[in-house]
Image (cartoon, rainbow, N blue to C red):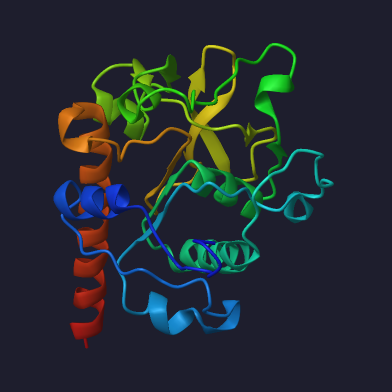
Length: 243
């Protein structure tokens, strides 16, 4: 809600990162599109990007009860995103997911979430300090260890990097068919990909879209996604033109 009215919106930082770093043209799909009507939209695109959000996935989607905290929820996004993810995986569309997007992909694959990471024994507080200016909120907050040979390690050209941290929820049980690609120092899974080859699917818990041109690692992640989208488009064109 903005004032008394509901709005469909997306952060400009995501659109800029997609256009300027991935070199793709973003098409915003409104949350009003019913889950059963997404195929015509997906017929037109060469990849799917899932943004972060102030809202959280409703816990019933992963078999949990609603917590006592005053969480923000967005049932329309839940309905659309979960259906889009299922269809994208089936179509082998390139898929890049950030923050809430990572959590959505994990749930679609049968995983579960921690609703309050900071309350779990042994885990850090991964939330940003809202009293700080944006540059401080999005500054590097902790290190993550990258799985050797992963697309993340390839993008970083090393196996440990520093990332920002602006999330209250996180992965509890990793979904089926997914492999962990990054771990925070407290052991929390911070990124994953599909365990099988044949589809680009990368999900990260941090926010690589923030000032992406100033961070070589973040930039490389968006460049990888853009390259995967262009390869998908080329393959589709080749298949459509073959006898």
